Amino acid sequence: MAFTMRAVKVPPSSASLEEARHRVFDFFRTACRSLPSVMEIYNLDDVVTISQLRSTISAQIRQNAHITNPKVIDMLLLKGEEELSNITEHAKQRHHIIGQYVVEQSGPHDKGSTKDPSTSEFLKNFYTSNYF
Image: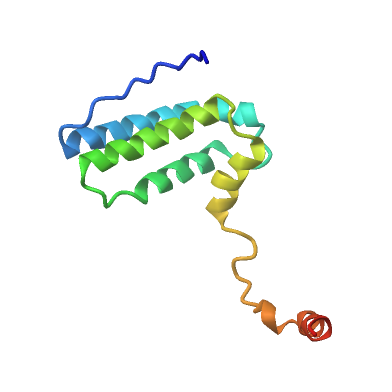
C-alpha cells in the first residue's frame, strides 16, 4: 500500500490581530489577482464580471469581520486558500462556481416565494386519494 502524500506546509500562526489582518489583505490581493485566470478557466465571461466576483470575495471576507481571535482568522484563511487552490487547479466544475459565487450573490430566484406546499389543491387531492 504505497502512496505519496503531497507535502503540506502549514503557515505559521499569526502572533497578533494586526498580523492576521495583514494576512487577510494579502489573501484578498492574491484572490483578486487570480480572478482573470478563473474567468478564463471556467468561461465565466457571459455570466459574471471580474468586479462582481471581487465584490463577492470581499463580501465573504466581511462576513467574518467580527472575529478577533487570530487563531480563528488563521483557520479561516487556510480554508480560503484551500478553496482558492481548488478553484485555480480546476478541481471544481463550472456550475459549482456559478452556484457558489454568482447565483448566491444575487440570491436564489425562488427566495420570495411564500407559498405553502401543503395548501396546494393538487397535493390535497393526491393525499386524499392515495391514503387508505
